[in-house]
Image (cartoon, rainbow, N blue to C red):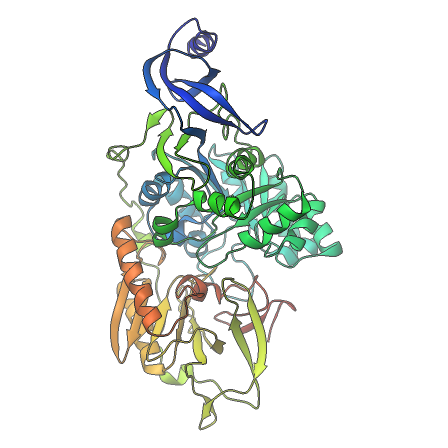
Length: 564
């Protein structure tokens, strides 16, 4: 009551604000216009826009003020660092809010992973919200580490930082009205349920939208996005390290003159190195502007649209009563971020000084377990023609090919054109090993292996010879998860990801430096620039993205949704 009274007194001009940003060009996301004036702040709240006096006054003449940017859908685990380290990186480029789906870590450790992430994001000077994973495991056609049931979702759904149900990847189960997923959706009825339904059209799309799913981030072209908007879904335009859908969707959006209210931005999966080079959500904004979008509309998509969709009241706008998460820009062409205010405080080198987190659940550090792998396990019979996974440049989609393979003594012999890809189960000691040809990876004289393999996160490895493949896989067991590159019988690069085999305990700078070096190594070994050597590889095991994938059980036809 006392704070509300103080806020009203400051807003009405009866008392001074604690802080005022003066003479700025203020972006109003409601009317999509620029207002010249002051922004009055009291503690962590904007209390007025107009003409104000403050205890502290900061001249912003010639500068632009807009709300803090929101990533509407992302996976903290994909950055491979602890939430504290990620926050340090993204807030510098204007992102003040992350909406995270932790289904990667939950596939490894189940309910304890939710507790771990909620705890690890509790006292960070950034808004980090959680969407509860809906599809763990994603399908019955792979082996993961743990389940996350409807009852467990019910236990967490009312947590104040849980916004709803994470991406519903089991879209076929939804369309077929399977009771387990419909029960999960029912628990999120008063919140929001994220979608994940690539290439879903017609009556199948109608059934999916009818279930209560409200968003989708899997559109790769505007035509698909348009049909989904017609069905009432809101579209999260994804621009990450591997999947880059922004150009196609925004270009179509501009040509169609469709209102932007049902569109927002997300990264989904983006490496720290790319965040450092390009920025985070600011990169999405700038790219949209470069394509011809009005800058105010692009900023609205990155702020208010996301806040409104996810029920984040009093966020995503520069207006009285709204959270004082503020970005100050030099211009609206390059979206150069000059300063960021979080809860009314300037973000500087001391902002994260008091942030510390010690891992309490040591089981999170011991998640790689598999039986000894021999060369015989890696053999693949070469038939007249074999099913082949082909990488699609700049996408996480794949093409399903049926071609003749190079062979020796009746078995597939990989080369620069056709790599050998293997998935090894690493959670339950089942001994499962699956092998297939991979086209487009182009690695020479070595192998790349990782425990990051969406979404079950078994070991996935691709190479051009069995010796380097085995060396890389066995080294992952020694370091309990991470990235490994081998060449000519030696380990030539490694990044330890000991937390669930997905997250490092190193600083963001260290992870970025190691990752950058390893990417360069992979490029020198032939992996093309249009293919992220780690993120793209990690998606080759995800059986909910068309057309063909490899799980620890075998090759999987996503279109038919069955093992081959």
